[in-house]
Image (cartoon, rainbow, N blue to C red):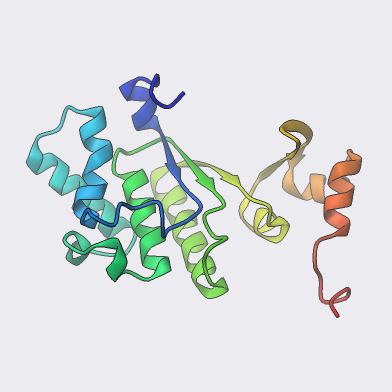
Length: 184
């Protein structure tokens, strides 16, 4: 459970949740929201926390001017970037991204995914994407795991799993991926 995780586990594994509209507290400024993970893990002075928050906002291309803003003042894409910044503030080694683009417009989805790729490269960050979007999975992942009712049914390099799925559930999923050929 999340409550039983050690401070080191909390620091090393961070989450970005599906909805950028409900994952940030509307009563807190973005700066205050980003300080919460730092306060939970402890060990930093107020100035160190402020610097870490500013650095995280810079890393997601929002900038320090967002520190005093509230979530209601931000677009969906900006909110999702703020949520990514909150996850990055503790310098994790693993970022778990749970359907993080599903509530965003397609153009915003692309910019968030590009940002995550850059952060992964710059920080050596491992990422676990939870998604129902096969096209997104194909685009962002090196390895793909397919779950059916919580059970792992297919796993391997993304191209191999998508070209030669071993399990009937994976084959069924792939048959139902929308394409231009089967549209309308």
